[in-house]
Amino acid sequence: MKQDTAGTLYLCATPIGNLEDITLRTLKLLESVDVIAAEDTRNTLKLLNRYEIKTPMTSYHEHNKIGKGPFLVEKLLSGENIALVTDAGMPGISDPGADLVKLCYEAGVSVTVAPGASAAVVALVLSGLDTRRFVFEGFLPSDKKERRLVLDTLEKEHRTMIFYEAPHRLLDTLEELARVFGSNRESAAIRELTKKFEEVRRESLENQIAYFKENTPKGEFVLVIEGLSLETQKKEAQASWEEVSIPEHIQRYLQQGLTEKDAMKQAAKDRGVSKRDIYKEYKTNE
Image (cartoon, rainbow, N blue to C red; front, side, top):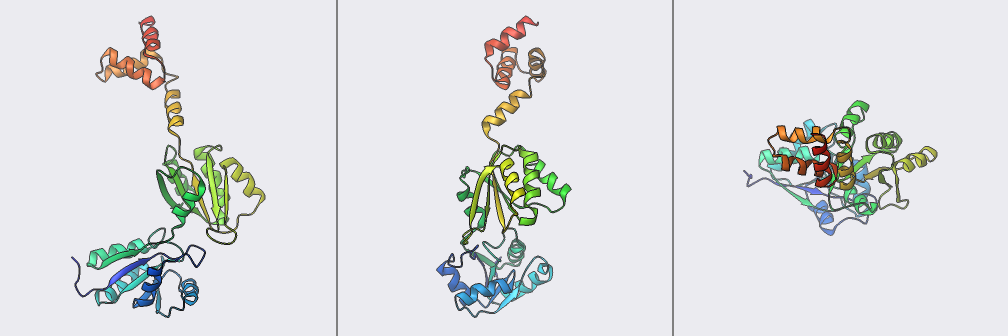
């Protein structure tokens, strides 16, 4: 239940590179709120100085969120308005902003968004890969075993996948992606979004690895990976039946309660062949 005297938490998107990529609404909010909660006050100060904004700041980041979150909620409950900003992009995406939003809802504090740039969406549309359906994974775990477990769950993912990665881990991550998705999987390695040296490398994972073995990665990266195509999924599913005889294949469906006719029809669909071929093989081996 909303507290009538409480202030509002404004989630304010900030530029992901070019400082001109900020909305007029966000500038007005940053100037008018009581305090700005910033992931890194030194980084945010550059933005505030660029637009001559004098609003006081306080830090809110992964390492102080447990104590600072309740403190900020108390300020909001007392009637103060707070703008939450991350170093770049939308608060709550791969940062502890989501934890503060949860605390606000639990306390009955209003939350709203001043939308703007987000590296994941910008990279997706720059990648040239399918944008109709996608999944955002953010930063993979630094622990190798955990990272492998996460990637293994994505092995059959058919949506376009988006990852964030630091330059010093890029090559290891590309090699892990190639292991899971295959070296021929299409990808885009995008760095320095909206900045002077913005670069989009559209290559297979194999070629990405070869390039970055020869060229040291520089800048923060967004990796956009093509999903498993429906056609490939279909071929893999069909190939999985190759070691099963047609009579055995049909028998499995009969045991599930299907009629002989429906069992042959489903077997034909599984294998990508005609019902006539299935019928002929099945009857020959009866």
